[in-house]
Length: 400
Image (cartoon, rainbow, N blue to C red; front, side, top):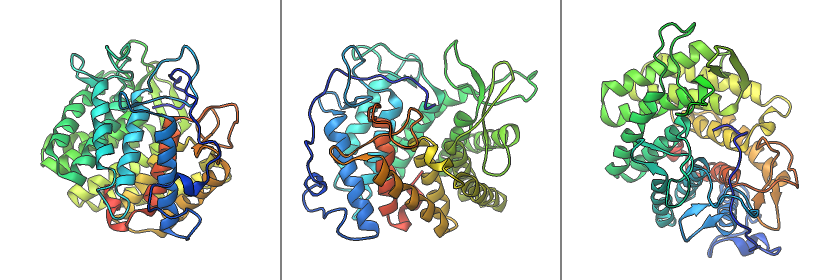
């Protein structure tokens, strides 16, 4: 789940909206996004952006997505599993728009069915690219599997479907294999990034903190102490090994023990979420204190200058979802204020009005580069952000 991961794409896809108006793109019965301020505006924007995602990037014959639009001759036909996971999250988020849980149920089911096309039974993991007969299987990334597990948990909590809980537990059993067991490391522990010989990280902040979130969810759902032990082990490791002050975490420790110091918003977010979930499941006030401390410090850092805007849109979506998760426990209007300001900016600055698709820089953040193609990954991020802004506060507990 790094923004520099190279893209896969599909054969040329030429359908277009041809300059259709915003109102024309809305599903029947949905008012114009400019009709009223407040939450209805964000619901409308989420639905318009979801319509564009489905029109330009969805492949109904397989239920999968393209990586980019348009696609070029010779590119691979389907997206990586990470964009599909984010499209799944976006579909859940629009399905939860008030009145919640009905309009897009069938779409949600299709997303989870599509995810299974990436399942590699011999490996016991979701591959980054679908195995045969759809493609040549890609290496399984531990962070991809962790976020897929988190989406299974969300679906379980929203629907009560225990099969989703079983799938979350199954994927967790793969994720914990990432833990580094060499006791002679200068800082032992941490989780590898990818199950491949070329893996560069033996302690990745994203994998390890996302694993903590997944374990905390599973402990809350099952009461199994094994999950609580993993949730604390992974959370504490990231905080101690990679913490760079409250709310900020270095990206990871490489195999040669050097530290990759880059700061990303999603590492801030997943650590906020992990601490919030630990508090929610144990009522340990120290966990809540750490979550709030990280959230306030992260907001102070990321809202300076253009730091937030220049981060990948999908990383910001993960940060915001975890802030709303924390808000469900300890309310703070300031989180939504920052989220609203960012959402307004990408709507005004990064959206192509003729298609409803969003463009960013190569990193996935910043002012749009007209030469770059819109992606399923970041289109899904915009949908998630808009939809969450329209959610009822009582649903924030399902945000991450």
